[in-house]
Image (cartoon, rainbow, N blue to C red; front, side):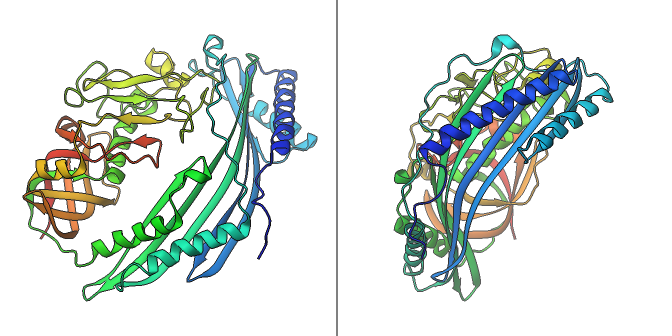
Length: 454
């Protein structure tokens, strides 16, 4: 085996790369100006890391990668042109800038186009402690993946085989600059370990997985815990059956509750709003969730998976309540969508930064008891979500619950409702928060959904 430290980017590499990338950004901005652009921006990224896949105790892949990309946007007044390149040679950069400028010259002016306002540029770049390179060797990571898989296979006799265990470790450098004079950079790491198991009984085979992710390798769950959790989940799915069509409360486990909040965020994004293709158009200041519900954004969270001092336009990020006491307080806007709507950017060019929904003080067991009889959803499938109307209809699997107790696994069913009603009918949010995503939530109990079964 290769007994070397995982080659991402060491400390000296980061300093050198940052310096090189800043110089390239400045050069691109100067070239854009020489070509006649009235303003310009450039984003540069570099990703270096390693991914390993193990199956049946054999190493399937060991993949090292080091990728760079440059995104260049120029404005001739309010006409916009963009180009990208992965080549850092003088000739390639000159060609990319020239291509962006040529596009802009033939593009119709857009009154809403342009850089974000200069006054909104980030002035303080916070140390958010996002950079935690590992000293693990390639052999260490291979053994970790093998141990993860072995723990899953040893969990229960119904586990027939592994669908693989994966481990990855990556380090990222990002630099953004624009002709306002703003230059900002960040260095971050992301490590993960995952495992997928296959179990079988007389009714057939099931597949399920588990994963752990962190900026800091030492904060990952143990390999044994990940493997056992994947096996526990798939064994729990065995013997699943359909249930009768009915209208019942539905408890979304954290994994699926996160998707529910994702639909909410999709409906309040600027592009959906100015195109009037969202069921939440013109709902600012209106109740969307029940009283007491707070959804907030925390861009400066230490070590957060989506923490950032500035967004993709250089705008300073800030903490805010998106929903307060159930009432929608703000949309998700970059500068373009904000101008289209006659508003100010919310520093979300490129997406949200660490969003949380408050819990209502209930444990997962409390929520089962509150539900009484209903469905615990652990997986949803299909694309049956219409953000224009809010109609929601998705395949689902999980567990049937009676008298607050899990009875048996459920599969081959559909859950349906309307997102506006679903949000309004949130009865409780659990304190079983899942921190493996930038959307952090516990289980969410929704009253009165239609379950289509046998």
